Image (spheres, rainbow, N blue to C red):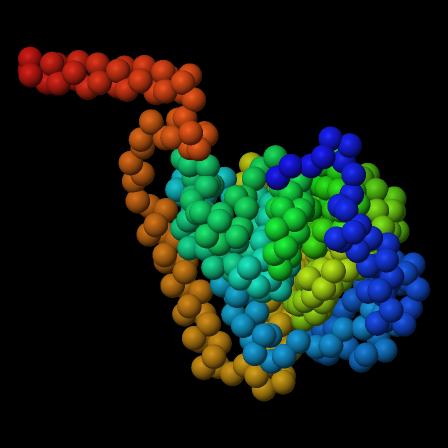
Length: 408
């Protein structure tokens, strides 16, 4: 991807100016551009923590921000992935304690965000996850063991990003947003019908890369949905010490894009909001920002002591808003989920957990030459020299070992 030196916007002779495109997109809603860009006054919620469908008048919607309830098949598929995601989170936490994984940033409590993020995309779309979004990557179709390979600490990533259109999970904060807008810009220049979902947490919104990504996406009118999982803590720093904005979704208007906030533990509302955001981005409305209010139920990682910065009473309050229990109650009360279906889903979740236990227990055959193999598409002379030096040293080690064995 090449951008002109003066960073000018695309030629308006072939591309509709961003402000005109935004105005056209807003016309269908019958509201002002300002009302379109600002999030609804209240977060969007469709199913309450007790699993009851909320009346339309209480869902937080307003003109231009109305959302239909997703179809039953979509909701059942989402619930199954919620259950699998919860089982994966718990299994991975156990594998860390057993020493079979080096670290795991659990998304226990955030599974609704994970599932909705993956399900709102088509096969041709791209997703750029954070280090905490393993369940989203898995829901996208990547083999569970391949997803978790990065957390063993023996390889950079276990899956092919191009095959699944999923960026490699990364621990550097917010860099994936820049990668996301780069892919979106390239897709737009090629005339591809691609939407990019860029995932981040509330802590990422305090980073400079966040500003650069959103500003670039807005100026070049790119089809990107920025999905912020606001789980209330950037490791140990509470949101109140990061931002005093009315909400993180309100940051969108400063860049000239639409923002929305949604209950991040309500998978019904999440699917509705993200489905529309992706649709609008695909239709040419430009980038959008969706903030999901959720909560990290477990520690930041296994190396973190969350009792040092939050109270048990706060965790208990959010436990009552659990996304898995909420969806189970909603589907059961509607007659869409019975004991047989529940048993089948639980069996599937346990099979995935077993696959992880087996796959992550296998000994890894280490090839030191991989240090050089995937740095550049065409290896540089310096890397070739270093690779030859390593090969020679390894060969001498083998010869010395063989000599010692022969002398015994």
